[in-house]
Structures are given as C-alpha cells and as structure tokens.
Image (cartoon, rainbow, N blue to C red):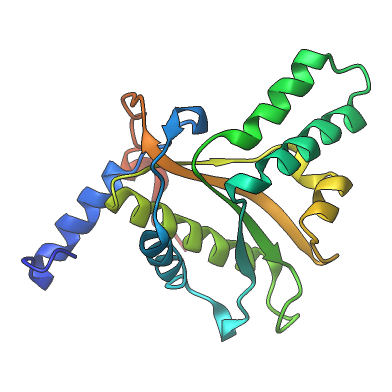
Length: 200
C-alpha cells in the first residue's frame, strides 16, 4: 500500500487497485513494458499466492523479443496440424499473435510436483491466485494486461518447444505492456450474484 496509508485505509486502497484492473487485448499493448526491476516486482507479487505445503506447482516462462519468431513458427505449425485446410492468411494471423505485447509470459502448472496427494484443482487455485497478484501488480505499475489461451497451447509441437514435462500443462499466456487504446471495462457482477449463504 502507499506509504501514507494506514491499515484502516488498506481495504479501500486495495479495492481501488482491484477495480482498476481491466483486460486489455494484447494488440493494444505496446512498449515500453516492465523493466527488470518491475518484472521482479511482478514475480514477487505472484509468489505471495497461497501454496499448500509449498509445492510450488506453477511457474512462468518469459518469451523474450528475440524468441518471438520461433513462437510464431510454433503457432503457425499448430494451426496447420489441427486444420490442414487453413489458409495462408489464417496461418499468418496465428503467427502474428506471437508478436503482441512487450512482456509475454507463459503460465505452466505441474499436476504432480511435490506431494501427489494435493489435488490438481488446488494447484490451479494457487496458480490463479499467483496470476491475479501478478496482474494487480502490473496495474499498480501503470501497465495493461490480458490472459490469452487457445488450442495451440495443447499441441504437441508447442509442448516440445517449451520443454513441458508430461505432468505439466500451460493454461494461458499473460501479456503486459503500455496501453495504446483503453475501452470502458465491463460491469463487475453484483456481490449478491456471486455469494450466498448455505442453508443446512
């Protein structure tokens, strides 16, 4: 929290930050992206996520600018593999996604690392909390962000390119950068629509 705030003011400050977070499409994110110090802050924030028995079931892989052409090839090949009739324009559109946003992170979750008794759903909750913390820190830094997924992330060439272990899977990419065009955010659900009381 800002140094001038007191603990009694934290809820309002936290809610203000959370409410400011918006999904900005990767094509609307440009340079500059987070610098080295800011990236460290992002990962420090992610590391605050709850993690049962500290098994560290998730990690992030950064795709630097020099690796984007390789990622573009992977995206293009993944599309051709699942749709041999894909047009050159469709393949080029798939390839183009590799070049959006100055900071591109791949979220990787391990379904078996550490204690195998810890359910994969609990691991996903931990990963989701890590991602949300990272997104909120990006918002606090003044950047826009988005999560993107797709069939390519499940393709074998993609898994091989990122050297994913058999027990690992990649739920999404995280894009972060400077917002070039912001749109009004979608209305948030009313608390009454997402919370209820159990009547035993």
